[in-house]
Length: 152
Image (tube, rainbow, N blue to C red):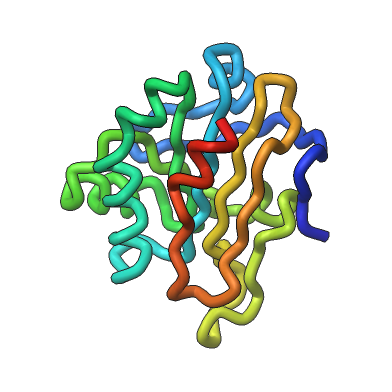
């Protein structure tokens, strides 16, 4: 079942591309959190999406929000992806598919691959409630970042 606006989500920890571990509750102490799930690093639409977050990150920071990209890729692969794209925010590895499953955005039929994230964005308030939720109808669709910022 997909997590909807108003739902309270559970805390989680995921490894980041820089070798650290990110705990959601630690980040929520500083403000809202944007979770941008994407199917796979190094693919065209995913690269464009993460680069759009990169290019507009200051707008999110001005709203006191932290942005995290999340995929099933290993954090080693995400480190290279972040380096090649000069990403200025952390990418998190949900390799075990726990967070995407909990939020209801696990895709078990993505071009023959099972268990990647559906392209989706969640804004999480400091009290762990979902303020905004968007899930792509098709993998080629990208989120409207103006709507994400409005939710903040």
